[in-house]
Image (cartoon, rainbow over all chains, first blue to last red; front, side, top):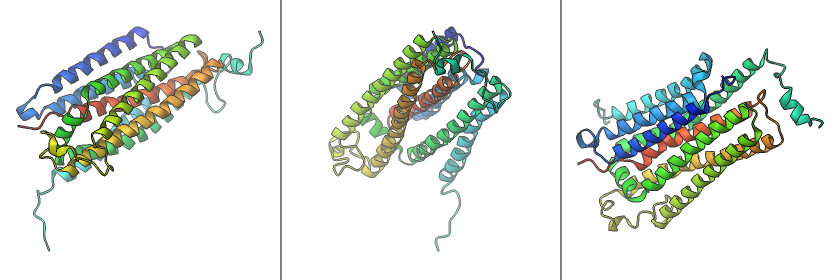
Length: 102
Length: 233
């Protein structure tokens, strides 16, 4: 919670980490990882999630906040995952079941 | 020197009357802001869901369009600009916590300037899309495809879906940047009028939360739109 003052050094370290992760993302995009580059998306998204987590925990002070704030911050992404799971579940399972054509 | 009403408000602030103490008040402010950010996550999330569905269905069009028409260099510049702006915003909140008004204003101005650079780059990119006839809605959409090696075999309607999502997602994001600039200017103005102090700086922190959220959205937009691997072998 905002009573806590985060030292500037911490902000700077996180900032450098974010820069490094950005360049790793770019470097990884130049190579085709996994068979036919199928892993590229997973790796890019993993790095993006790490960056987002760093921003949320440190720049947005969630790390220094109460459990309740953690729940509110986390809830956003839980709802997002529900939307993704059901939407993608629909498209990814098309053609799995025989359909009546009458 | 007599204190202005604003200075008195800042210096002697304890808490609003409906709260037990300042700690409870700041926690409420955080919770309210995150409730709003949750709606924003879902707002952008719906576009991301659409993006992923059509990436699954029209991958070839995605990869070819991104490779041919999206400038990775400019995307990197914009990502860097926003990451630095998040850093300056965090430093601005820190300065407000320490009661350093001059530094707070300086960091807010830096954040605003970086935001404007971001928008400038976006303008350049959108103009390039217009020049290459890949803005959905143009009568001439896709007229270059026949001449481009990468785009020859791509269904123009599939490419249209990609660019519609590109413009909707980056456009919505740019709109959030514009609104963020407005919020930053408001906080800057209030700070100049000595509205904030170490006892009262929540608005600065909350605008910071909004700004970091905008940065997080771009952190996902960049790899998804600009770094699509070339077509599978």
